[in-house]
Length: 85
Image (tube, rainbow, N blue to C red; front, side, top):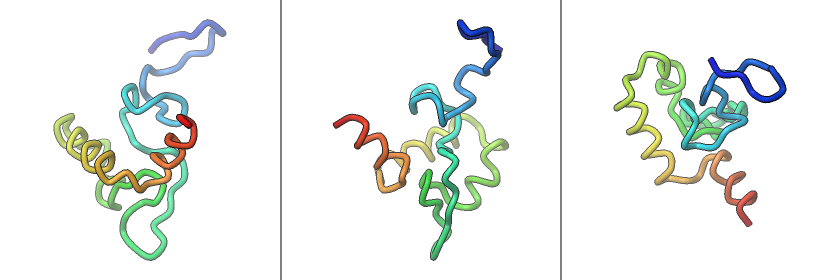
């Protein structure tokens, strides 16, 4: 666990809502919706990937990250594109 300058404890890379992809363990952005299909529109993962994420090896997580970045349609990536323009 690390401590930031304001003395509030935080886990390095644990909160993907506050850190960029490179520091995030999970693609979750807290916008969970699977309306009409089995892919979360917030992060781009399947329902199985979301529910089993904590059990995935780092290699499995890396493969999911690679796929959802290549697809780029999840809200996570749309929001980042807007922030970078």
